[in-house]
Length: 133
Image 1 (tube, rainbow, N blue to C red):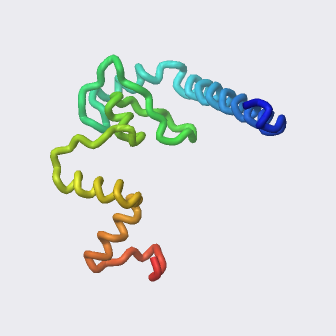
Image 2: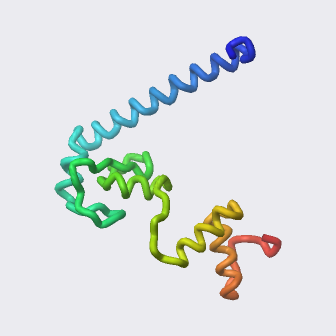
């Protein structure tokens, strides 16, 4: 495939990969600077339950960084992290949740579109959009 890609594109990809690695290293260094390398210990002292699932934090708990803006991460379970990242398939017994998720998948709708539709059905249209939306 190398003959099909221009050298400039390959150089761009290499530079982009190097930049991603640098950013990852700097984020880790920032965490160590802010928390002294003891983030898990500090978070475990703060709580014993996952903020997302409510389950007890086990040895497999992960650090989740809501925003990389200098705020410390939160310690959550793997299941909670997957739910936040949207990687967890819905296994809910709630028929309404299953119906909404089915509609969302079928129509490739966003949560914002579903919210607008619900507000419209309730007679309180979303004031942050135009009438055409």
